[in-house]
Image (cartoon, rainbow, N blue to C red; front, top):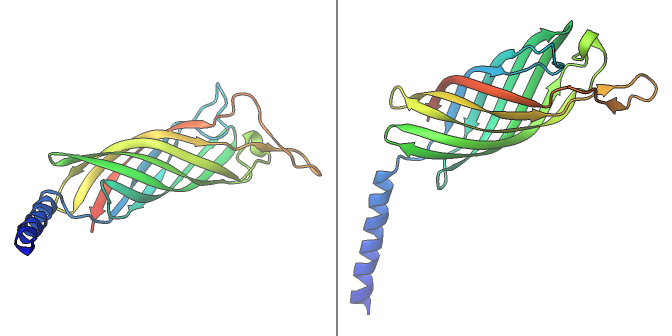
Length: 192
């Protein structure tokens, strides 16, 4: 019995060792770069201004090509006489495929969005917090053994509303106030 079991155990260990050599080791990823948002938060039709900002993310080592990812981004600009100062922090999953040297990924993130109080047109009062979601993907191209260039894009959702006058302060929306945004980011990824 033991003589039949021993070759099976050796074969199992050898096959897992060969598989481990064919896949790169799981590593943390740290990303930082430029980000572009397609519209300002008060960008009603006829007055749409894109916002520029930064994006930073950390992805944990993968398990079956899936990584847990934390993403933070911020955007600044002015539209309709009001400053737009937004900050997003989201978490979720990233699934990655390797094609020769490049890595292609898709991701789904959800979290919190914050915005300055005077973001509506003419600096009226507005909500300062909202749910945020991002569905997207991208491509990593290696530059060195540990550093890669990343280009990514996606569809971002957030729902900010205006705030009524005192003493009620009820939120309300005007027609055309955006909730859907296009987001593009590019920068460097460090794998460690």
